[in-house]
Length: 194
Length: 194
Image (spheres, rainbow over the protein chains, first blue to last red):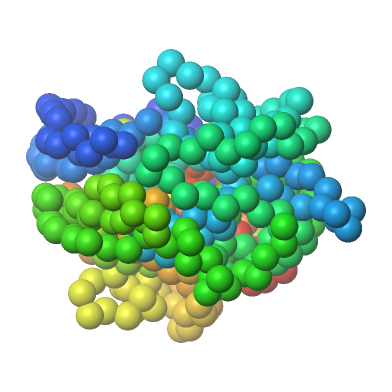
């Protein structure tokens, strides 16, 4: 049953679009409705979120004990209604490059800056109901440079967490954002960090 | 700046709920609007998706060349409008246990069954705008048992993919669903698979 990864031979499962319309604007995403038909002629409506891309950034710096630490943000997440600890990140603005967004979000959320941003990987947060991509960058030569510059609807604490601790605890406690688990995986793949 | 992982001391970033109401039903999720206020008295509306939990299952079986392979599903994803290759999974029904959902989805989408289902980990797909959890199970003693039993709005090919190939290519090509990258990470953590 091995198949080629490419999809040219898989047209029998490709649905075609009949229509696609705005259903409701929700500020940080739009709900849209698309009507799709299958190759054998079935037809269904699907809701999906038309969303801007996201960018996040893994920034490692030394703490006062000279340990390698991730620069992380603690905030109350309005969907889950819980506090999480995450890598800095946010929405890629219209016309902005993902790398620029990562750089901007790092500065605004944490006050840290980095001399270089390396692309580590890109993922689709939710192909079933979303159309956007999440970019992860690795910051190099990280240093504090300014104070936070948050939106009015944000409250964010900046914290340093040791790299091995976060790797061990990712997916538990306050480290439960799937996109951060992916970002950490990109980091470990990039750095060959076991 | 190290802080305890627990959140009792972090009340200064916890927003409190003023109201929470249904904005629009979208079949597989509801859009809701919540009004939240911060400890210092700011007040904002947030949209979020009230969504059922999800369950997915990593099932390894031998192919005809006796290689260890993941049982995977190829389908056209209506949000991204692209084909993806994913581990089997779907929505946890009302009143259903996540393990039962994983077992059911494995059978319905692929025709495979497993004697045991081991919980590998749980993640929040999107704490910013969703309130649900995604459970990953590892199937043991996997065997073909029945034919597919799909919903009318699904078209799914079943394919076997070698474990090392998927680990190497996760996050690229058709392997771009973030929740699957997380599920694979759970699998690697659980099995100590480098």
